Image (cartoon, rainbow, N blue to C red; front, side):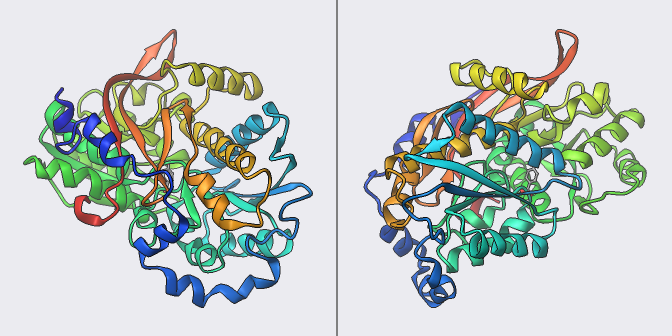
Length: 429
Ligand code: PHB
């Protein structure tokens, strides 16, 4: 297909040119461009006793990393995958960075912003961690944003895609190594219109990420002339409950295609029901890639066959880093890697590379922020680099189809759409 069409009229080269900014951009430049100086200053005193970055250890002693992830409810496997791959990366690199031994302190956020807030405070104010990483759910991430921003604490988001954190609520103290919810879905809307169908039914969970993802898909799909056959269906989150009424509603709308985003336990519930009602293979399912990722495919079984999805990674991507990562993860856990594990692996690498660059000094915040923003490497997904305007990663987007490969279901890459940078505002969904 025409890559220019898939990339909102930009070729990959155009994208690269637009994205490569002077590497010398500083936190001051970032703050000026976000207009967030007042908030940062006003809320500063709360943790002043802890020093610039919270850890009293600062430049010596162990490097304390707080992990805030769900280890319960429908996204528990996502939290476990991120944890395993981060530990794997650290262990494989001598469990040290910048001359300091890495110490991980894990906390279960569940999927509850209030619990996550309590755990974040504990990590920062009692444990005095040097930085916090993790966060799976958009709702939790948005709930924590002001705490990290106003208290100038570093947060590396390893999953939650809430668009707003790359837009109106971006912060120099918050980096995202995973994706914005817009990134895999906007290109997919274009691709699905051109390659699958022009009339769609949309189903997603009723919380921030579900709305972000559906909006992004519809923005490009409708921009091409595609149509919704009914109002989007937003289902209860986190527990969907009985999926039968939702699948029945889809059946009755009789669309040419269904677009969906679900993840973890909800993805298993939805896709299995899609199969049980006979929709698999009769109404094409097009999805944000999380819906049929490697963590849920074994439980979904044949109900997932043929699902086409957009995502920034695939198990079978052929590059040297992916080969090393997927083999090591399988050996460690006995399971195939998944996109969440990949994001954890990259998050760990961002931490190690940036802490090495500042020789373990986490007390001076500005050089550390600049070091993180400048991290670049060959990731299992392709080239890893941050958009310096937003601190959100720039992602390649792959179109994958669920097929049987050597007796098991996997996502096979069928198209590559090039690099996508979140627009940084709501102009494209
Ligand atoms: C999110 O809440 O941002 C989220 C959760 C699970 C996913 C993707 C995004 O698989």
